[in-house]
Length: 505
Image (cartoon, rainbow, N blue to C red; front, side, top):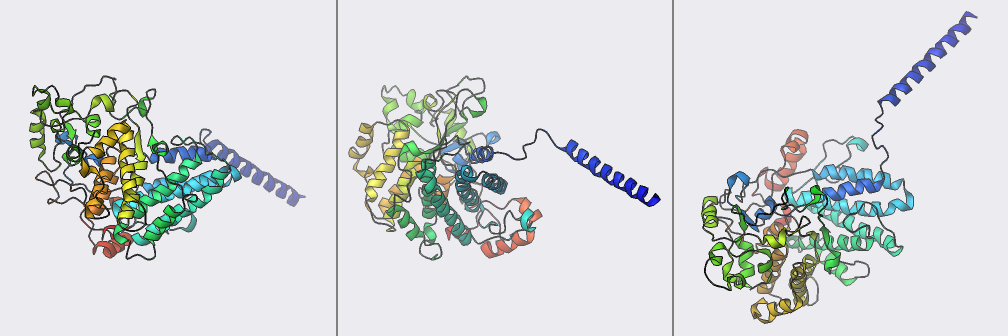
C-alpha cells in the first residue's frame, strides 16, 4: 500500500512538472512573432533587399557624377572592404523555400523565384569580391558547417548559371498555366515578366564572362548565349521597356519618395556640390545626343553668355572630371563652369523618375556585343540601334529625334563588327546605365576598359581605378583559415582593391 501511494505521488509530481514546463514555454512565446510566415511576406522583404539607388557613391564610381565637398563624399577610389550581406538574404531565401514547400501548388512560383534570387545574391557578392563560399554556404544549422570553404569563381559561375537555367525551366509551366506570385511590387505578380528577367539576367552574367569565353569549357559561355538567343520560345528576354525591372517611387509614402526629393518638399534648383561627370557628359555632347538636354542643365557661364540659344547648344554643357582635385572642382562649380542635373526632370514630383534595375537597352547592347564578338550570328546594327532607341525612349525622346540622331551625324551609326563597332556598343551601354543598374557601368568598364575612365590628382589609388573590394573584416574573424586559403589561390595571399580576380584575367 505504501509502495502504491509512493508511485501515485511520484506520478503526480512528474505530471505537475511537465505541465508547469509546458505553461512556462507557452508564456515565453512571443504572441506577435510570425512563426509560419506566408512566403509572399518573405518574398517582399527579399525584393526590398534587392534595391539599389541612384545618386549615391556607386554613381560617382561609375563617373556619372562628381562631388566637390569632402564632407559629403568623393570620387577618390580609395574604397576599402566590400560586403557579404548577401548571405543574410540567402538565409531568408532558405526560409522562403521552406514555407513555399508547405503550400503545394501555391508555393511553386516562390520556389522558382528563389532560384533566381539565389543566383542574384551570389552573383552580386562574387562580382564585387572574387571567390566566396557557395557549396558549403548556409549549412551551419543543417550540417554544422560554420566555416565554409570558398569555391573557385569558375565553379561559382557554373552554379549560378545552372540556377538560372533551372529557374527558367521551373517557371515555364507556371507561366503557361497563368499562375501568379504574391508580394511582388516590381511586376505585380506577372511571372511572364519574371521569366524574361531571369533569362536576360543570364545574358548579363554570360557577357560579363567575356574574358573567359575561350578558356572555360566547363562554362560553355558562348554556347549558352547562343542557346538562349536561338530559342526565344523557351528563353523569352526583355527587349521592350514595358518589361523593365524597375522601382517605382510614389508621392504618398515619404520612405518611398524619389531619393532627391527634399523632406520639406521645397526643391531648390541649384547644387554647387554635385555636378555631372565629364566621362558621361562628354559622350553625349560629342554625339549631339538629345538625352543631354533632358538630364542636364547648361552651365551658368552659358546662361550668362548673352546667347539666346544657349540652352540648345551642346557646347553649353560641361562635366567635371572625376580625377580632378575636389578643390579644383569646387572652384569650377562656383565659377559656373560645370553643369548640374536638370531638376525640372529629375525632381518634378515626389515620385521622380523610375529607377531601372535591369532594362531592355542593356539586353539589346549585350546581344549586339555578342554578335560583334562572333559568339552568335545576327544583325549587330539592329540591336545597337534598338539599344540606343530604348534608352532614349525612357527619357521621352521622340521617334523623330531618335531618327535624326542617326541621320544628322553619320558617326553615330554602327561602324561594323570591328573594334570601332564594339567601342560604340560599350559606350552606348554605359550611357544607358546613367543613374540606373547599380554598379553595372563600373563593372562593364572594369571588364572592357570602355569608356576610358578619368584619372588625375584626385585619385587616391596611385592613379589606378580599383578592380575589386577587399573582403570584410568579419570574414577574417569568423572564417580566417578558409579565407586565407582562397586569397592564396586567387591573389598569392593579397587582399587589396587592385587585385585581379579570375573573372577579369
